[in-house]
Length: 495
Image 1: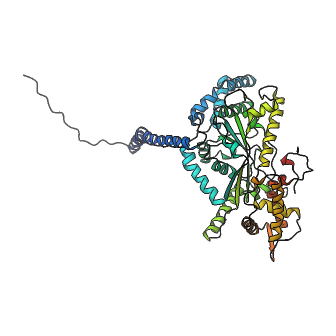
Image 2: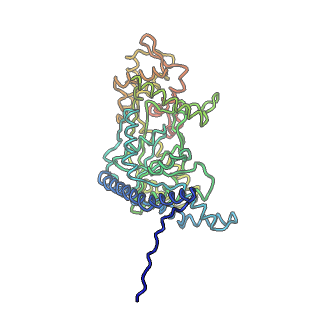
Image 3: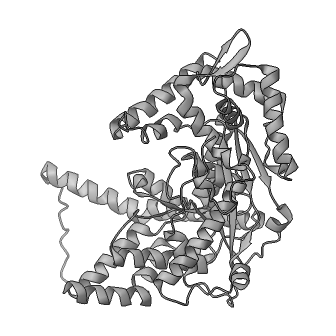
């Protein structure tokens, strides 16, 4: 007879589990659910939106997003870490320091991780550009002009564009990106000030790369140089501020050669891809950081520290919010961008019989210095003339004089006519209109830059340094003909 199977009793007893173990199991289960189900779904959805943004932008942009810009950040880091030129310098560094090669590779990887961006098209075009547009339009009346728009539109699509910009304000980053968003996505070199959470992650996603100013580390400089060269060879549209920092007194600063040197030192005029520099002049009726910048040049007062600068910034924001709540807030006048005539590096090399790859470091340095000074001079020639700088320049010419509104407008018109005689009408952005001058006078009176007594305007002696700061931005455009033309704009004497 077949054996009968006995039923197995079902265990219904409770099992005691320590609370810490239960919490650990719940956390592990939640982590697995997040990692295996939720994160892949969200990543797929976000990647789909990014790809849609890229496809749409490539249809709308004049210059398509190059593949190099769309590479994953880890791919860029690996390419930079194992670049043959970087490895050659790393090997020399290990021999000099007496360290194993693995130490140099790890150091290079750390530098590459610090430098490389993680561009996100959705963040740049959907979120970043919308925020930039809203902020710029809220603060300023924006104007744009082209010295030679046909030449600007005729740039070969396969060229690597480099916008060379004067540095007046931290708003320059936002304003320039906003003005070229229909043409291309800009990539900036950002200093160490932005390497704080969460600003660092946001700036990386916008395509910016980080640089250490004035670093004496040869290995770091080689890693940075190779990234810049890879970006140029990959067709990345870049923007550089050759002054290396914000103008402290309103004058243009002498050019720094670092990034421009990296861009041109390996340039082959016979290669398919040309490098085209576009000088860009930026000016404002009001620079948000004007008083803070002047403090750093004063011997009598110390520049504010980090806490003081933060406190001043918050006070400035709060004051403007209160004005807005009382319906007394007004925009800060005009912000203007002027695109100059493009300069082909291939044509420049042919005209001057230059090969940046030949000669020793000293010879190349001299060639790069000449190119940088030429570019910055072109930037200076394209700085827009706005009402506040023009009024400041006129008042400082005769500090003790009092003007009626009509007399002041006549004096301003006379200065504008001198520019028109030189064929530079494109530099003028609403500065000649009566309404723009009235708005500028009202804004300057509120800021106590000028004083009004019985309908007569005169400068405020206590604010003369700030008036000079604004006047310096355009003083070189009104230089006397007797001044040698070889004198660079950053050495133009004050009015």
